[in-house]
Length: 142
Image (cartoon, rainbow, N blue to C red; front, side, top):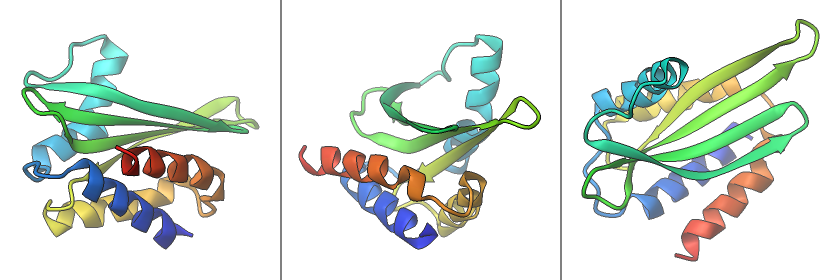
């Protein structure tokens, strides 16, 4: 299942990132760590960028928000943020993860990091499949 998700997001990346400079390590780190700090502290978006909301999907206690990080004066995302939340019923706290899908031309180390981070979504990603496929078709129709 994990391989299907990676393949689906790769197709999304190829379509979304046409003619965009590759994701940098700084942008990857911003999406996976800096964005959380911004939100928690009510800070402005990093200078030179803005976020575009691509939608939210909730299934049971799982929620996946997908946003594009876009450089100013560009129209395509230089990275895609997958913000994942899971309600933890037994301890009444939520689990959250910030994953960054880099552009197709990004260094392989960034793709390796993204692939490794998918485990944070759980072993069974079936809950997100429907939403991911709908999002892929939205980009394919553009």
